Length: 114
Image 1: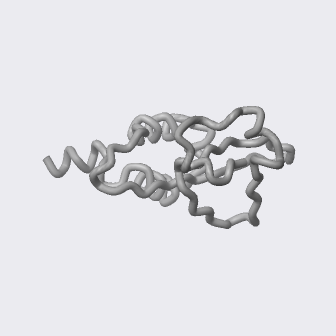
Image 2 (image 1 turned 180 degrees about the horizontal axis):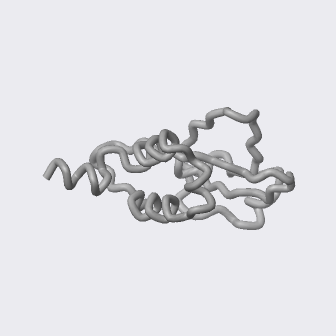
Image 3 (image 1 turned 90 degrees about the vertical axis):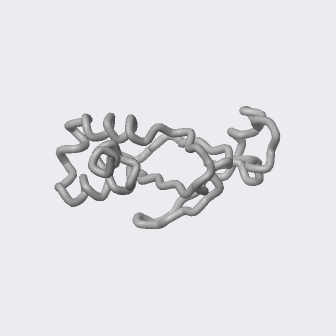
């Protein structure tokens, strides 16, 4: 669910308005779809009413001079330590996820280059 145009706001939207269908919109798409969106959109998840788990893979592009808000190394560490999740990934998927989340910024790569 997202609030169209909210990336241009100078303050948070009214939370009651954000929950109404007249203001907030729900994005749906077939499996395998890709959404490219402005990360400053006000957005939130809605309840998963299906019997299936919901998965999302989030990526981000940021100009080199912008300091990211997220600590991707800590997030990756938490994901890789979740045995119920990590064990379901094959080695290629694990490596792909590490590359996607950490890229050349991972501790291991920095240590090798140092």
